[in-house]
Length: 310
Image (cartoon, rainbow, N blue to C red; front, side):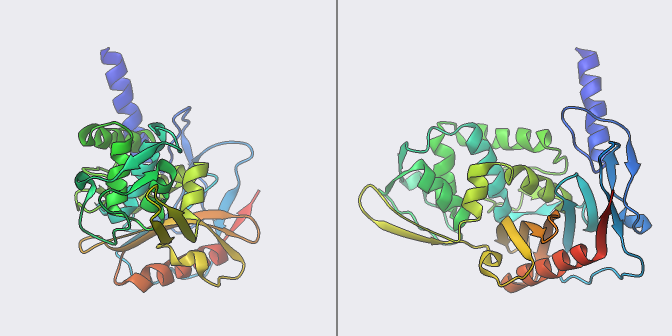
């Protein structure tokens, strides 16, 4: 018993120390990224691992955000960071974790749920109202596409779990995917006690966007449905980059967030025309537009500044 406890503590130390999380196996990391001393990336040594090399003579980007991080989606290498290990409120990006825990406890996409007074909450736009009855799939999409807080509470309760148990599972899931700086106290992100570092937000997005239904939801630009009472609902995605004219770079999904303490936040996954994929995080942008313009600046800079040598 004591051996198991000490072994788990040892693994937690290793995973929090290095930019690598592998729940199956772990081997000593090696420096792979020929970047500046403060921007080294680590990865377990494997024969086929590509090496990300930063071009020489390229200055760091100047970003109007408090914190940022860029993770190469495959393999698990951090290429860039600005105060990337310091936790802060992450606002509605929390809903990605809520969605992950929901998927582990999904009562069935065709199951229905009726909105009650317990699902009423302030903050953001409310698309659902007292008495609305809808399918779980529509509830899931409402939570993620329009970042609806009431829909998120309803999604949690549709699982049959109480709120306290659901939040407990959110924190367990966070540790399981290597988010060792993260903590959650509720599912919507309205609380500033939902906190994580920029690097841990990247890890969250990486895990979330591996889930087909979740990825499909966050890449849906607009979504219409009717409740069982025949009330029509029209949703527009809060991710404005989905409709942005951005040549040679594809948006593979993302999530917005905002509270006064968190600032304007965005995490997204992107692919260039060569098939390279990265996850970009910006936290604490000064306004709604800046979280997208600074993301574009950072993503473009990464793709122009790094190459893969095999």
